[in-house]
Image 1 (cartoon, rainbow, N blue to C red):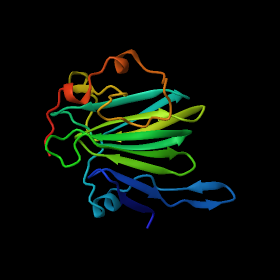
Image 2: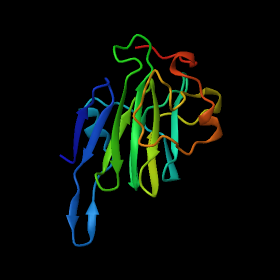
Image 3: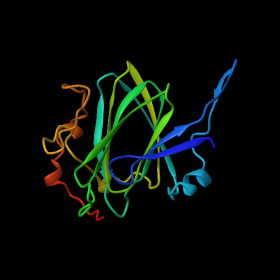
Image 4: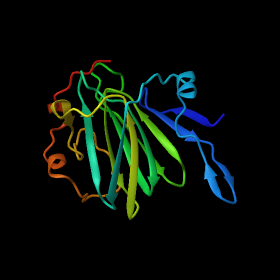
Length: 184
């Protein structure tokens, strides 16, 4: 089997490890296979791929899109290393406001599945990073929302105290102030 699926401490977020096939030319791996994902409980129709390039210390997030354009994401690093975070924002969820993190890198070839109802963000730990993420809904500016990266309620252990932020990410509300239409 080319994948292993590991459920994390926050319900429905899944770490995916891929099997590499190495030889003298390099390696080959499958990064997504619908039948394998469905066998492991991930039923999602990805329709858009996004690629971001960032330098060390950049923090992107915490982002989400609300219904009717909510997005599930499959996050993979193709170059570099990131500290990747998913926050449960589903009202009435037993893990509401809880977060999980994983180191994703070009070396470990891990991916993180972040379902709808979660805010997502990452911080670049290497000199540069290229992050590819598949989503199941197209980008919708009118449904785009976010949570401030340093929300004291969340108390996320980011690998930097002074991240490089986009203006829009530095002005986001806290978890208790967000516009959120997700339910568990």
